[in-house]
Length: 149
Image 1 (cartoon, helix red, strand yellow):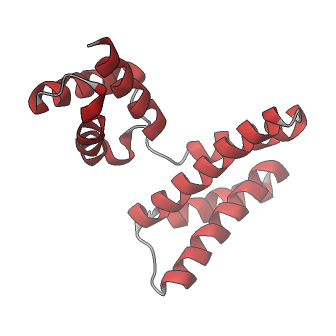
Image 2: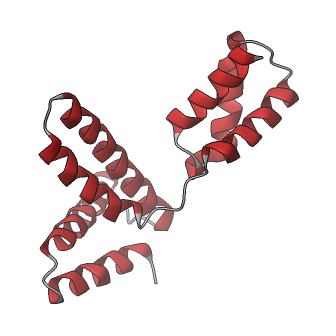
């Protein structure tokens, strides 16, 4: 079963169980996938759908941060609830410790010893990890490792 079919089936289940919150988030995710397909003029495979969902999750994280800064915990809580549902369809991200292991390996391979080489390390890291790790976590880990030498 494709990821799009899974989303549709889960939305139907949410409708049957009258879970309006879950239904609305699933409906929004399906609409985002459909809009991306229309904009691109082609049907998305599972990797394309995952990319759309990852973008939706990133938007939710940014909205949570913005809502908290604006003193709106109610909006942040709503966005967090949506994020939990979206993340259930995304592959598990690497932990900070797992990212650190890969970062140490890349730093050793490239022979980088200071923050000036961070761009080279980040390029290699993001190529290797792709969607397996959060870019902010990767950046933080690499910066800390290079600063602490």
